[in-house]
Amino acid sequence: MDREYALDSEVQHTQQMTWGDSEQGAQLNEFKELMYQSILRSICRLVSPAGRTLLDVGCAYGGFLKAAAAAGFRVLGYDIVPAAVRHVQKLGFEAQVCGQAADFILTSEPLDVITVLDANIYWPDQPAELRQIYDRLKPGGLLVMRVVDKSWLAALGARLQQVTPAAGEKLLRRAVNDHRFSMPLGNLLGLLENTGFRIVSASPRGAVHSEKTSLPVKLSFGLGTALWHTLGIFLAPGVVVIAEKP
Image 1 (cartoon, rainbow, N blue to C red):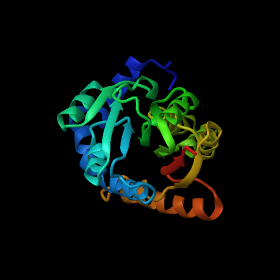
Image 2 (tube, helix red, strand yellow):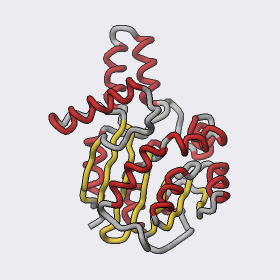
Image 3 (cartoon, rainbow, N blue to C red):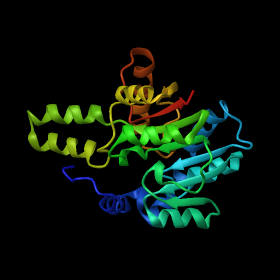
Image 4 (spheres, rainbow, N blue to C red):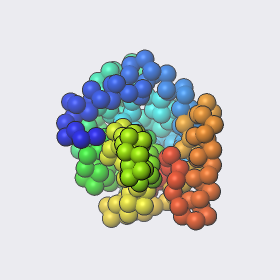
């Protein structure tokens, strides 16, 4: 978690993770189908897919692109991992290797929907990236994010360090190492609004990856959803945020 940011290093790091590995990453397409379909239902309640273009930022091995194309969207994607982009291209979709929206050149037309599913954890400058995404959307276009928020885990680790340093350090590393550019949900929502977006919704509902997700994680989503919608306290492992460019 003390590494300085470098795109080449980030690519190497991602390839070591499940979602960046060529074999396991492709297998996640099926594993995450529950989440993909839930997010697509939310999108389709707001916009009809016919004649609309959707860009998936951090498209990995194309699971969401495949689901969105089946729903009727024209789909495009980009990712920092070359093997993932090659896999997506073999599936028949347009995709590019790049690390930020400003470098995406497969279309210059304004987009109807941009999805960022767990990919913002690789953005070292989130305000800049959100501005780029805002600029790529049509007026009325949607930004849909599935966001990891481990700030509560980091806070717990920091407190635990005062009592048991080794255990606290372990929690901190778990919270930060693989999600080091994530931020608390409230901060992200404020940043989206400062960028110019209107928040349509923000909820842990629909953020569970799979029916095969472990029971403790499912329970944490259930508790987190209840706390968020009743008390405004966010403790869920993830959240789906939908924002609109006015």
